[in-house]
Image (cartoon, rainbow, N blue to C red; front, side):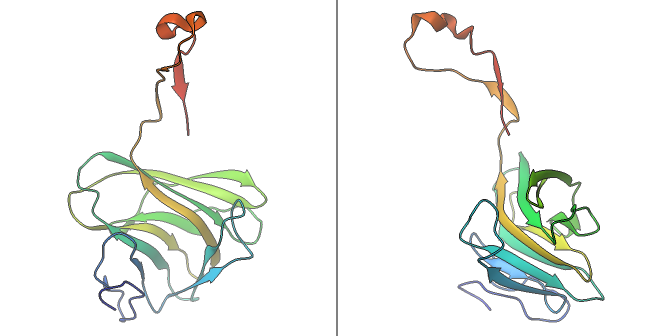
Amino acid sequence: EGGGGGYNKSPGGGSGGSGGSGVVIVRYPYLTATRDTSTTYSSSAGSAKLVTSSSDTGEFTQSVNVGDTNTYNLVTYAYTDGSAITSSDVELYYNGSTISTTYTSVGSGWYKLTGTLTGANASRVYGVQVKANKTVYVDNISLNSYASSGTLTSSIFDTEFTGGAAWGTLTYS
């Protein structure tokens, strides 16, 4: 515990560690987290295998201070046994509560979990809550602040696209 991060092994699930970017805080004794290199999303280097006890949920989180109250997107990819993932398996988690989570199949049993939240100029925990008696693999957890659509302006000089008329509105995800 302390400085370099690690797991919080105090009963009752206190905040543990010193927080800050790069510190993963796992609430114990309800969740066991291990690195898994065989079940990964998009051939990443490894996923987090999260296993909960039969009696309670468990959170896999990181403490971050985003420094403002902008809207943020919390995104991760999750896998169980190849079947559909729902809120009965795992939900996105922010500041002590689950947040509204959208589940989108991305193939091979993996699901993209997305949610939005309002940031804070204070340290908050972000991550996932795994439901009781579940094994869930999570990969590529991200927290970002960007619009869901916008106008693309190119600096390419091409008279065919003068004024940007051909670009229109760009929507990205």
